[in-house]
Amino acid sequence: MSDQGFPMADVVGDAAAPAAADVPAAKLPPGSQPKLISVRGVRLNVEYPIYEGENFIGRSDENPVDIDLDDQEQQERSWVSRQHAIIRFVNDELILEDLNSANGTYVNRERVFPGQKRGLTPGDVIQLGTIHLKVSV
Image 1 (cartoon, helix red, strand yellow):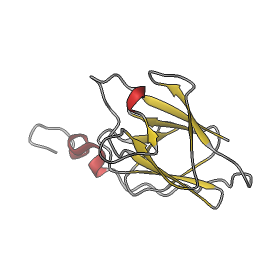
Image 2 (tube, rainbow, N blue to C red; image 1 turned 180 degrees about the horizontal axis):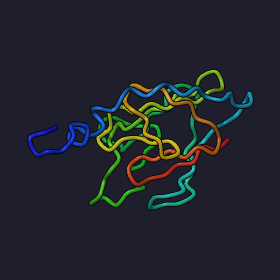
Image 3 (tube, helix red, strand yellow; image 1 turned 90 degrees about the horizontal axis):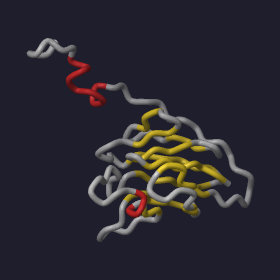
Image 4 (spheres, rainbow, N blue to C red; image 1 turned 120 degrees about the horizontal axis):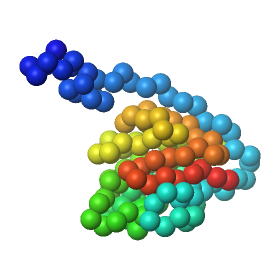
């Protein structure tokens, strides 16, 4: 119990959460060109291609990102970190990892913790702040 009478888990929040297990990715069909489609945000149905290798997601500044979500949020309310998450597209698999973002990364409403490797499949919905992106091929 804390000094205020709350259980310690309530006081420290996600910091006390156990490390989540990695979730494997499904193999995409060879030659697939995956993309993310905005299903919630300022601009709907915007397509963001995912390229072979590393794809950084966030808001552009002096460190560029591959998937720039700056125009998906109102400027006075920014929930997406500058370097929020990364998607690796290697060997026909998509792997998402949170980059220790301030507001967290979620897939299908489940938290992806920093350092956790979360495989993606078509139809998955990634949430970064108030923005929702659907994985598509």
